[in-house]
Length: 262
Image (tube, rainbow, N blue to C red; front, side, top):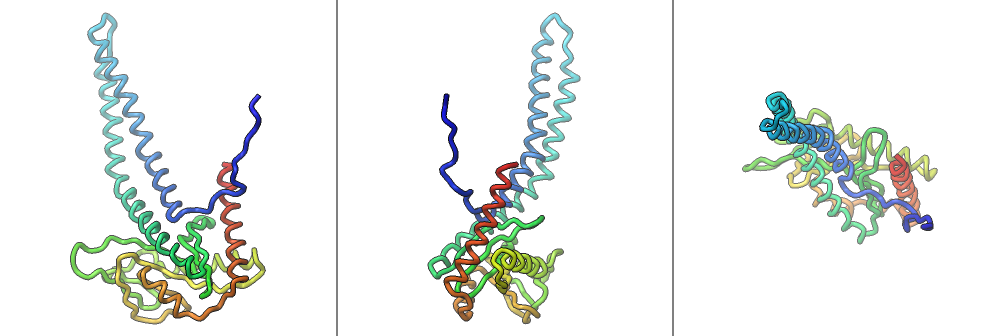
């Protein structure tokens, strides 16, 4: 009898940049494309069998099965046409989060702990930085740039405008809500009140600051973030950094264990 075994890992690994978007993309492909494709394939095989049987003594019904196959194939092509834009958007967002995540990983050399893709109740926080300058939530926004001309984003302190266009969902509100959630989480798990500074980054865009926000918040190109961090005063010592990072990693691993049970 084979002896029971278990994973050599004591805890599940922390999450990767853009992992939630990968999960959404996989679910979208499975639900919207794979299922109708399999249905079309099954009816296609049945239709082919009926065409073969047409030359046999039994009475075949190739026209009926061919019509069903054509309907299933048409539905699949319709789903492909309707789903491709959503898949493309998720891929672009995922690639943006990965690029920013890889860039943020370099900050470990400056004493920062870096976490990716924290899952909240119906939302996620793309990245979290914990280091000498404090605790930061980092929200990545990946928008397509114009083929020519300036790629400029303006921030007036409360609203972001992308080439003069304002997003339907204000990312400033989203970023502040994420920072508030993380602050409450760390206070609950550590007993300490860590101020959280929300950051919104736009890879590949030039960000123009037209005003000062009412509460601290940064809107940047991710390449500007290291300098902004260096310009801030040191607010956390090593013991505080380790305390916050330890409890945040425990929260992430607990969530992953719960997901593994499902």
